[in-house]
Length: 107
Image (cartoon, rainbow, N blue to C red; front, side, top):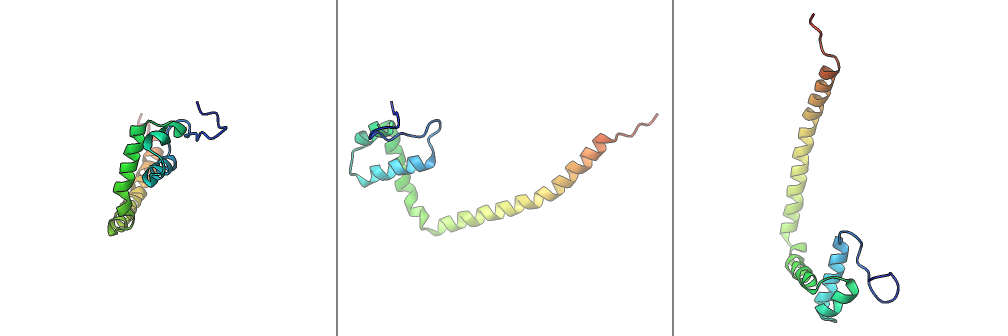
């Protein structure tokens, strides 16, 4: 068990975060230690480290590619489209809220 002392490297409690995954994958990619040697101090199964390493190798070329810029542009376009939809929906919610608060009594 990792107690935070000594040479053991504790993984974050709960869900493992992306920074932790990346740092372990980078160490595996460097090749200074085997996957099994990395698994013990990080308290992660060796196959998980292998998976992270393959993910890293697969994604690294995309960091410097035009595809990344296209994804960023697509994200910005989607964000603009959703922002345009927010205005009318807000007006509609306000109108429905007022309608709900003051029902007309036809007696």
